[in-house]
Image 1 (cartoon, rainbow, N blue to C red):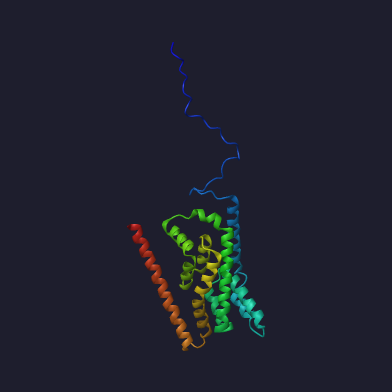
Image 2: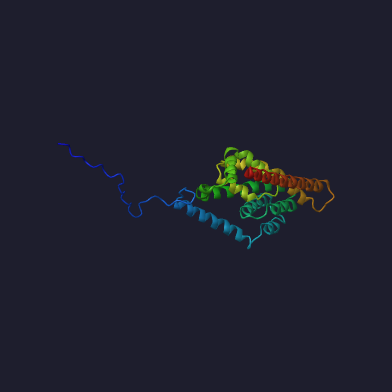
Length: 252
């Protein structure tokens, strides 16, 4: 008598549905889950940056410096005030050329250059830390596209060199470099060091141009104006060449 044949178990067994609230965190279209705390920190970053930019409607860094630095203010208070206002103004998206011009007009070439470089470094460090701590975790998973990924890899692998070259070129948004570095993998110390060394030459040129503006025929003014024009031309050529290479890469 043949043995009874046991039917095979069904291959598709419906899995039990997870309880409400116990499933995984929702993911963004890119596939990378972003914690709710990271999204809240990003909102806080946007609020802080928006408030800083909007505050410029109520105060002007250059007007404040012009009113407070005139007179017999001791040098140590003058230096501390200038660096503080410069750093906050930089983080609030106030144009750095205007701050450098104020440094040259109010403090002269030597003192103005030193304090402007210090203020530049502090302002960049402030923006970097805000973006790194509040926005990086939420925005980094959204890096898409060949250009953004290439920039992120370059900043991460060659942080000091990338930031240094970025600071040397005029016409490039200063805050864009701060945020781009903060959202990448570059470390804080190389970022600050490269910002100080890279921004110093161009800052000195702008400060000198402002300090000697009353004498447009002087050697200092002509030299600084020539350097600004040459660096602007180099910056333009660099941007055009990068655009051409990117177009060739896309079509090839």
